[in-house]
Image (cartoon, protein in one colour):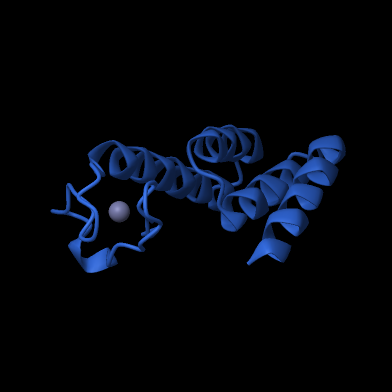
Amino acid sequence: MWEISCPACRKEQASARLATLSQCSRCQCELDSLREITDAAAGTYIAGQQLLAAGNGAGALEQARISWELRRQPETAQLAFLAALLSADYENADHWYKVAEKISRKD
Ligand SMILES: [Zn+2]
């Protein structure tokens, strides 16, 4: 779901090969741990989306927070913002709005 770049040489790894790729195609850096973290981040992000769709803002925010700790993606900050808004948690909504705005500007 999310691409990974080699932490050593920054080469982006083709997403179609991610499922079987354990080393960087350029420098042979080990990528299994990074892929596992990325998969866990994507899994919690998807769980958060499903909770948001089900109207569970607090649950969605918790999943978004876990996902964010694993991997900082703009869409995760956006999910956290929407989850906080759904929970009428305006302090967190304000925080995550700023985080989402900041990270989106870097792209
Ligand atoms: Zn590499």
